[in-house]
Image (cartoon, rainbow, N blue to C red):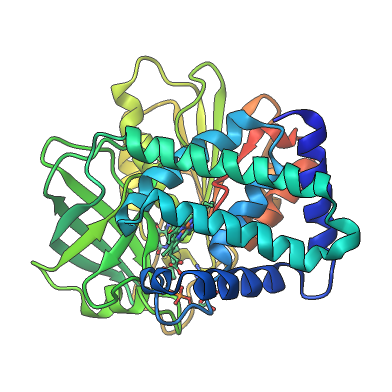
Length: 386
Ligand SMILES: Cc1cc2nc3c(=O)[nH]c(=O)nc-3n(C[C@H](O)[C@H](O)[C@H](O)COP(=O)(O)OP(=O)(O)OC[C@H]3O[C@@H](n4cnc5c(N)ncnc54)[C@H](O)[C@@H]3O)c2cc1C
Ligand code: HEM
């Protein structure tokens, strides 16, 4: 897309976002238009759409903001297109979605902002989004979904389970990627989970799932999963966290189950030629949150290039937690504090490739702390859909 078209799309989207209700109004209007024009499309979406309604909108916003960096957005759209094969939709549905996007935007913008030029610019942006997704979907020889059978479900904390499944066929994913998952008891409620292990010849994958109170899917996974259950998995997504430059030192920062995609990469690194110095900061509220430390310590014992620094906001476990969280000899002591601040004050991280994985608020705070410490934001990576 030429620079003028790109800037028209970006500026009009910004103005629309600034109107009362902004993103929410866009989502509401988009779905109302789409389902009125093509009622049969409603069946693809979950019955309760209030929570997830903004996901498609957020993706459009993300793409629009980065239209001038095709190297970032085109691979993401291609992955989304391959992933969307799980819905069993057709090109004709994409046309309807594109049309609903344009109509919703025009309605929100109003006649003053929505000139013919703006409409033309938006139509070419939508065309780019749709063709990138559909081309990738058509060009993908692999299956649209994989079936995983639960082999093991281990509750490592009251609200956290490690689930291992065996896939029905090999899935070519890179350590650091995630996948969208549908469990049997929650039809149409796809949720993302990160692979916690690199691919292996037995087609066994591992996920670390934390319960979100009041959530639809995670409480069911923690509380109801049984050996033999089958899950449906879409095509792998993401890549921000995937190994980029073996020449540069690595800084990895994770909180909670955010450790999963990082430990998958760490487990894969010894298989590669030469490893750069790598620091992993593993955050939690209490020491007991470091449920994966034993594995990370085991990795660091055989990988001299790896330093694991556990960080907890509280020095001690709460009184009701049974057991003591001790650090074995030779391993880095726990640091107490807020993870972003601890990392930023620990060392000068200039010239490192930095990955941050965790809740959106933790990603924002950590990024802010690092940038305040002089780190170039281009060196800080996190997945866009978080
Ligand atoms: C790229 C990516 C990778 C992910 N990887 C993992 C993973 O490896 N392990 C894992 O456990 N989860 C992971 N998640 C989160 C996961 O996809 C679900 O969002 C989460 O399990 C909640 O789903 P739910 O159906 O239980 O809650 P929902 O029914 O979707 O949400 C219920 C309520 O909780 C809020 N909410 C949703 N998620 C969170 C959250 N994380 N913290 C606080 N409030 C929340 C919602 O806004 C809503 O109000 C990942 C998310 C993304 C975007
Ligand atoms: C314009 C191109 C599109 C973009 C950028 C887009 C983007 C997204 C994103 C980011 C999500 C959330 C993550 C996911 O489940 O993969 C999503 C979900 C979804 N998309 Fe799309 N999509 C597009 C087109 C379509 C089309 C044509 C359909 C067909 C009906 C469709 C149906 C769905 C459904 C059913 C969901 C699940 C929603 C939910 O879980 O609530 N999408 N889309």
